[in-house]
Image (tube, rainbow, N blue to C red; front, side, top):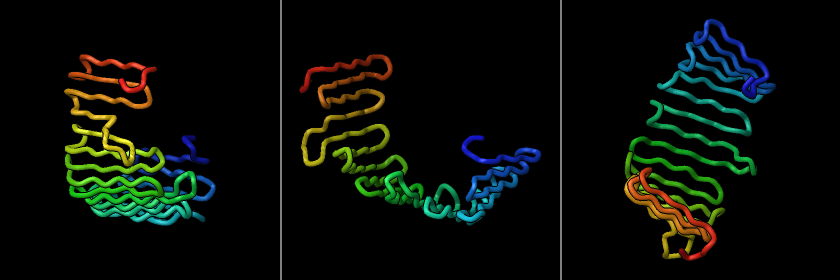
Length: 177
């Protein structure tokens, strides 16, 4: 059920148990108090006050005063690790091989460098203003001032919006539109 080998409840949300072959999760007064156990699991949480849980070789999450202080390390599909950090509302980051994202302030600046896609994106103030370009280039192929204006010109595709969602168009097939 939902990816678990066994799901049990008793007077939901008073008690919920979620089992996989290697990890057992138990929730008391779901989602506020929980434990993680089993051969690959360890930890406990009293949400939103404190939590520290580990699932061996997959992830480690810890928080204090969720969502203000969160640290999460998780294994990606390629076997590398992604490290996430939130110190709300001042700073947040997500780093993995080939991709780095940093954010400053609640509606402040975001900066992402994605080496896999070969792009750099900057938002300031995010999510209202966003621009994106290929690494090493000067020209921004995406530029948005949401919800008033936005344009994207990349790989022969072009799109625009004005006063979204009132007027929007897309065109394909001609590079350099």
